[in-house]
Image (cartoon, rainbow, N blue to C red):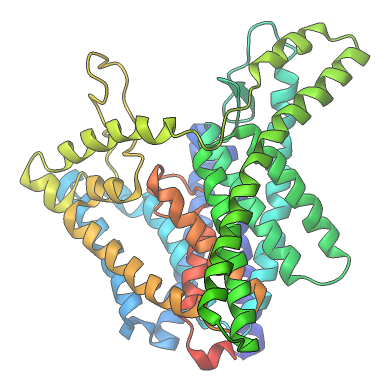
Length: 449
């Protein structure tokens, strides 16, 4: 196959994956029929698997350490499920495997494509446009629900639950989606040229607005952290090129300035709730919808720096760890990626309250895949992290590539209180920029030139 045609096919397939990730929330928790959901996953994951096999054989990437670890993790997950759940035809059609085939495809595509900038541009454009449709429908549906005396509870298509904007299942999933769209909007704003940047600028403001309404502190902190890392990377690259004297002091100043930028951004995410309430109140007054004005009290703003979330998660972490080491089978191979078991007994005296997962990436991998699977995942992160740090400090990298690296760091940070870039069932959007970032870091030097 000619190189030019192959590059276009690679970009097209990655855009298909990006579109699927952008719209995945619309069929979360069975919102669409099971056959449609399985069909979409089969189309995306199956086609990605076919292209993945072609690139693996053509580029002999199966000999590389990172690919060996990735395929080992996927293979171990399969045999873990087989040993615990038994062998069946449906074992081959688990959402986990199709999700990971899509992610590994994106990773390998970014690693091998000759023009990574083109891949960044088109994936950003497709994800941002598809995301605008999904998030826009959620905000409209949630706003309409304010007209009801009894609060709406449609957490898939949009409502306000406990004061936060919910969509795609809950406020946390919606926030992770908005965070990803926000970061891709900024990446597109950096990478694209011309009038199309107006679209990305508008998308950036819109996703900031939605992220503030959903108000998940983990995502807000991770977004600010991402921009802080990017600022530091850009300042470091400039200092390295200028070769200024007293560089150590300049580097320290760059770190402090980047931290200041990140901290300054945090309070801005409190503004969307006030803007939304003011705008809707004005419109409701004009059309004489008194119930909407009353219902606006459901929308609230909370401090992004509050540590309540982290304090609450520690109880889940403790119980998840206790469960994971309760017997040898759980310790070594986990409960499998097909298990529906939840984390029970988190709160003493409240056995009716359960957590759907461990609310920490590493503990969730341990719970699902045991210490063997966790070891493989940690080896992958160490391998990617080493390359990422070297790439971040490479003065030849442009601002767009540095931002992609910062996106990887920010999405990994969400793993403190969520699954982060390690998806189990839902194709949450967070892993997409992470695997793009890791694929870029693992490119050979001559491929980046």
